[in-house]
Length: 161
Image: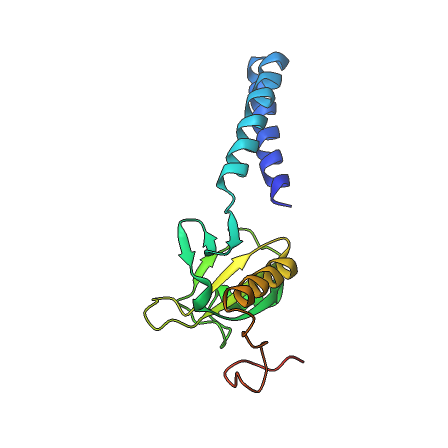
């Protein structure tokens, strides 16, 4: 619903200019402001890519061999993680989350002692498919030997349920 805020701001500008300078000026403001707003919002949205090289989010790169457990966060869990209230997600996590409140995200724990972040939190409209894609790429990269989260061979991971 963030686009409603942008639309309201453009409407206020158009009405103000239209009232002061005439309706043509108000329409001109709409004609110029809407494409600028669309391009600005599109260009400012983060891009998350998952491939054989790893996970790329903004300018950061996480190799697949450092991927630990992957879990989907709903809006409530994401809100807690952003504020540091989720005990499974450290406050020093790498966040790729827009300023508005997304509905879901993916938390990826990092199995690399040299990495300054213990986990990544990646907001996505398609969090379930992003999590599945990360798991699949990590499994493929490890030659199929990757254990599922919550398995007996991975006692550090939470059991589902």
